[in-house]
Amino acid sequence: MHYLLIVAILFILELVYFKIADRFNIIDKPNHRSSHTSITLRGGGIIFPVAMFVACVLGNASLAFTVGVVLVGLVSFIDDIKPLHQLPRIASHLIAIALVLYDLQLLQGTALYWLPVLIVLSIGWINAFNFMDGINGITVLYALVTIVSFGWIFKNDTVLDVLIIMAMACIVFGFFNVRKKAKTFAGDVGSVSMALFLAYFMIKLIAQTGQAGYILFFGVYGVDAVITILYRLKNKENIFQPHRSHLYQYLANEMKWPHVAVSLTYAVLQFLINIIVIVLIDKGLLSIPVCLSFLIVLAVIYLAVRISVIKKIAQNA
Image 1 (cartoon, helix red, strand yellow):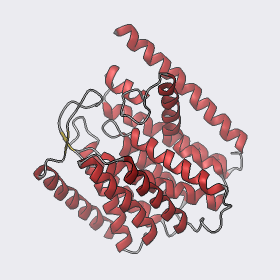
Image 2 (tube, one colour):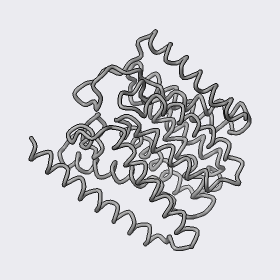
Image 3 (cartoon, rainbow, N blue to C red):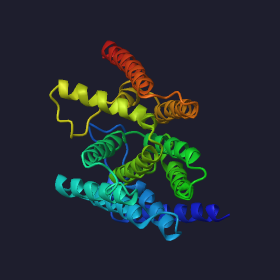
Image 4 (cartoon, one colour):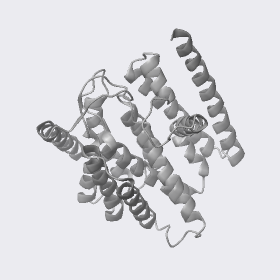
């Protein structure tokens, strides 16, 4: 019953935020890089760090983990309202990742040469997840299937309640975002804080099990982000600037697929991969070579679809 109460509280808090955003004109105006065409309330993803705070107050989330998520959420929210210099954003990411590693007791128990690797991969994941937030539903649906996957694995762990509370936040946010005309977008506050949240559980899972194959839980986003970056580098573009060259953007913008359909495709594909990963690991079949082969196959399929879509766009131009 207390979960229903938490959902109600999060729902009310989201509505309160909408009033504040409307009052102070915190809106997202579409531009030539946008995948939407109407003015929408920005920063609805603030519900994610709020949910993290609620979980901490209820004693389900540690203080260090909560401070990390709230910190990146706060800095990103300020950036949503008034763009910040890269320094405070990067600093908040580094501090938050340090808090995550501290909470997982990896700062003192991990070989020093692994720490830079963990930090670089975490920052890369946060930025990739943030850049993938471009159409209705994609961030929240992808996050939800990943949280459910983590929940299945941690079903007998004390962290399950944190995952459940964040899943509830996703459902609340999704009510306003997973629709043809979204009422709100996650903004950096939502995508960055959610990215850190997911990174925490990925690091925790791999550290506890020693099974690197769980990284495939981020496979769909990872392949799209990496290949898109390689394409942009090839075209001598600034990879840190907003753009419309992810596959999901081509599908939604040039191919005119409904946003929610594209988002569901990404989420369902990742969920199917997660099920396969869980089954393979349970049977002891997911070795490093198998994991790499899986990623290569996924990348080849992605490239084939991407090339096909771009050819169709060129033919219709």
